[in-house]
Image 1 (cartoon, one colour):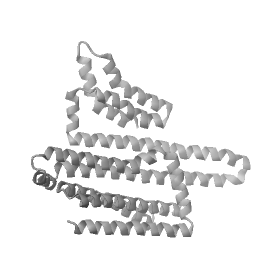
Image 2 (tube, chains in turn yellow, brown):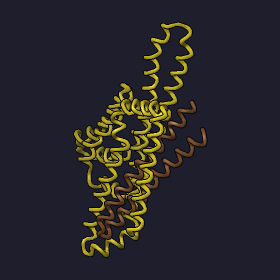
Image 3 (spheres, each protein chain N blue to C red):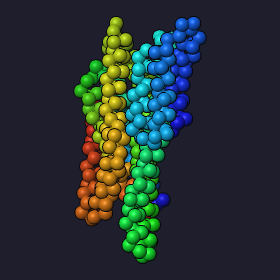
Image 4 (spheres, one colour):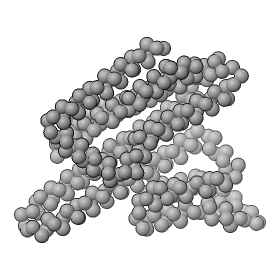
Length: 256
Length: 67
């Protein structure tokens, strides 16, 4: 988790901090703002607090970004550089979540284990089974969460391509918004970025902010689905969403 | 890993990745000033993502059932 964090910091501020150090009258306040994320990352790593790593570190990047010189901001105009940065942030969040999810499962196991050991030798097997279940659940959740992150990244790539690089869209913009192409592309970019943010919020940020709650909720959902009635309801729910997707998909297709 | 679990996971992933098509179509419709179709495509994208999430949950359930 530290390596992607350092890579994010280096991509954003390394050029700026090197340039600042070369000035005869270097500004200490600027240097401090560029270096702030390193201190937060270090503090988060040694304290083991996931909140500092996931929220504090990313928030500490903002002051440095605000004062970043114009020359260093030019890098953000390259879509590949932005995509690379998004990938790094995704890897950083995935690794952080991974570490947190694994630790939560182990902590739960330890808390349960204290009671188990007092009961006697007969409970050892049950304890081991609980541990296996906790680890299996943690792995399932990890896979589930990683899948969501991968989809969010994929959608970002699709939207970026559609808005900025697709020849068909560019032609349509030139035809329907003659004279105001730049405004139209900006409108599309802002709108689709908002849409992508909504997707990320629903699929990633809400579970990330309520990680333990979401993990328990998933555990409860899995337990509930073991009941036949709940399982039938789950099937109906999947059938409903799939049918609805199909109907809307066909409607979009025929609206062309 | 059971075949059913693999099937659910692949299907769920396929749905979620496939939602990209609807977002792409949404941009196309909006570029053509077809705002209603754009909104419908947007809604379709969200619904397909939700369907994919539900299916992937079934995949997790299948894996848990095995263990």
